[in-house]
Every structure is written in structure tokens, then in C-alpha cells.
Length: 343
Image 1 (tube, rainbow, N blue to C red):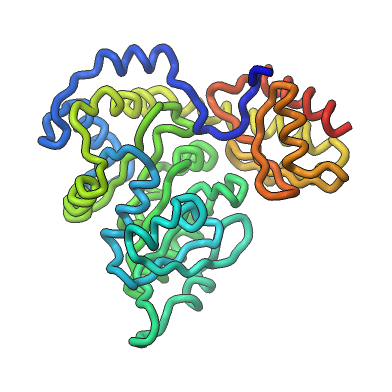
Image 2: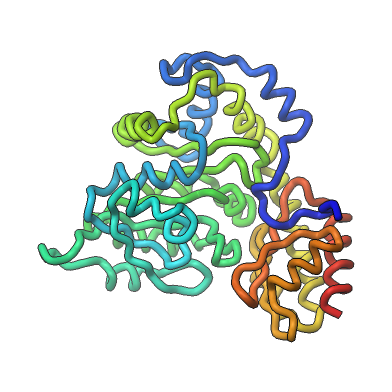
């Protein structure tokens, strides 16, 4: 059966007709020679958005993260991140394979750790131990249910890192969701970090790419690593234009995705065999647990057979993600299917 409502991820979004036209008409040049005007425009927009000296357009958010690890850390040093962080689970062992970096996984509710936890985890100056080098924040937290780190918590965590001599990095794959949900600007969120990036292919709906920002020296080294890792491109303005269009047209509309996620959560919470607190849904991610005889993989298969796709995260947890290709009517259709499956 064809998929009618795809809630598997916000990465399944397709570029709108208007975005495709904008991309087709983009001015292009050799981005490696800094001669692509559209790439240069996008990098300038992201640097200004995040309040940094410079930015770099990259093929993916994973490359943003891996380059940040390699710039901030030497081989054998250590990155401290929440145990649910993307590089720990979803980057194919990149921290070890590409950066040679050790990882300390921190605990805390909803994908967030606090300043005391970070302070207690930073290694003492001991030659037998890896040197703590980088504090990592993922905003919003994916496996934390799309939770938004409070700004005060971000500031206290980065204050500890700075006082203890650590660099700081923000994985901002869904940062613009945090911006829209909180009313706090991207520049305010990024200010405490040495590097930060945003993704264009999730809620912003572009087909390719992300951009990382930091100091001019950071970006100069990031360029070297982009070349080394095979991320350098030529007439990349065609795809960079998707990011330009997204920043100009698709940020405010993220509020629609958040509203749809809340509608979905409120409907799911009424069904038997589902544990879900709608108040926990802050952005566009809806996580729910199953308590009945039906497990998550089986439930996902039954919904898919009826045209609605979600994702199973382990035996008892399901994730649904709203995005620009999911309408209010799509949410109602998804709830109709969920009622059929869980009742």
C-alpha cells in the first residue's frame, strides 16, 4: 500500500515546487574557489543567523559534527555528550574512526545533562586518563523527545566547560525548531558555543546540506577537513539555494509542525496500550511507549499496511515526526489508523 502519511522523520520532506524553481535559477560558480555566489550567500546568512565570524556549507549534518570533533580535539582526547547524542549512535562510529576521539556519555532526563553532571565528569589532569576537551549539546534533543534545552541550562553548562578549559559545540540539527518553540533567537542559542550548525534537510525542507559556523580560524580548518573528507563540491549553488530558500520561507512555518505534533500526541494519548504525556511534546517529535500485547515493530508494520509510516525505536517505543509534507488532514488520517491498530 502507498504511504499516505509519512511520519517516519522530518528528513523525508521533499522540496516544494517553489524551492525547486528557486534552485534551478540559482547563480553558480566553483565553491572551492569561493566563486559560487549562492554558496557564499548561504554561508553569510548562516554566520549572521548564528552570530559567528564565518560559516561553511557542507553536504550533511554528520559531516558538520565530525569536522567539529576533529577541529576541537586531538586524537585520544575526549568529548562529553549526553548518552543519546547523535555522534554516539548514528554516525557509524565516526568519533573513533575519523577523529580518534574518546566519548564520555552523560546522563540526564530528556536528552539533557546539567552543569553539575558535566563538572563531575570532566577528567582530572592525569596522564593516565584521556584529556577532557569538548562539551557537546544537541538542540533540540532527538532521543530526548524533541526537548528544548532551557537557555539558562545551556549557559550554566557552557560556563562550566569554559572555566575548565573545554571547547563547546552545539549540534543544531533542529535548532530552528527550538527557536520557533521558545521565541529565543538562533544567535542567542549559539552565543555560548565555539561552533554550531543548522540542518536544511529536516524541518526546513531542503533536499541536501547543512552549514557550520564558528570563528574564522575554525572555519579555515573546517575547510581543510571538508576537502580531506570528500565534502568539497563545485557548482554547489544549485543545492545551497535550497538552504537559502528554506531560511527565507520555511522557518516560521515550523510552528505548524509543532501544532500538528501536539494534535497527534493528544489523540494518541487517548488510545489503550499507549503511554504518552502530550505536555512532553515541545516541538515536532512525538515519542510514545506501548504497554499492551502489541510491540513497537508489529504496531509500526500494521500502521504501514494502512498507509501511515512511523518508526520503532526498540521493542516498546515509537517515534512520529511532523514536517511540512504532513497536513492537519494527515494528522487526522494517522489518528484514524492508530485507532484501528490499537483498538
